[in-house]
Amino acid sequence: MSNLQIEQINCLSDNYGYLVHDPESGETACIDTPETAPILDRLAQKGWVLSHIWNTHHHYDHAGNNLEIKQATGCQIIGPAGEADKIPGIDRAVDDGDVVQLGAHQAHILNVGGHTLGHIAYHLPATAHAFVGDSLFALGCGRVFEGTMAQMWGSLQKLAALPRATQVFCAHEYTAANAAFAATIDPDNPNLQQRIAEITALRAQNQPTVPTDIGVELDTNPFLRPADASIRQHLNMVGASDADVFAEIRARKDSF
Image (cartoon, rainbow, N blue to C red):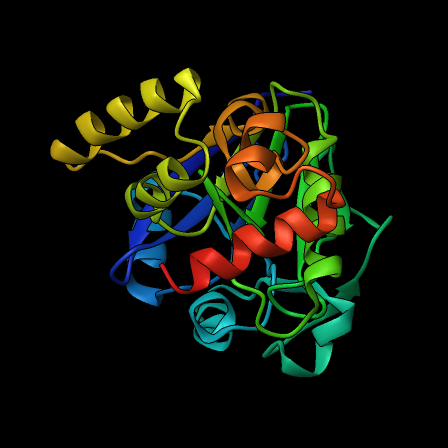
């Protein structure tokens, strides 16, 4: 099985698009469709033929250019079953436990609803990659627009259970703002302080902070750390459930 080649593409103001290419089969998947021209331009530069679009959820900056890109390439569109009626041009609807192929590579579907009701992630265990859309961010998580806090916490637990070395490709460059908030929730975490310094340096050079990995997020992302004793004490929630601590952190971020 060949190694996958991944291209990260700046789109709109802060979105990332991704092309995932399997050189053995020649197949290429586009993770979401935030903007048509940069994606088609990168395909042309690489000489790759788009075989699939893998949508994570229905929001316009993720599925809004499906039809243009499908018309230009003839690709197949795969998307969340729970939002199939909102995914333009969808050919195959998938949900938790399903598997999609890119050549010999398998992507396992995780239902990570909460940001939207049917949001999914694509986990490729053989290469330790996860494309998570707007569910998990570097030092953050998606705002809960359609689901419940309990649903979102359950989704984050699924992602947190992936191997620590798993690379996480999220869909936005939100990390600097997330870092400023994280420092108010977990101020005594030396791992977080070190990471904030690294993020500040990267953004000063206009460099991306994505991808991240599960291990780094477990050590520094407050949305994955509601069980941490220091966070609980800081929030005065020592006896609360993890789900309630998560909900409090998310509510604070919403008004930060």
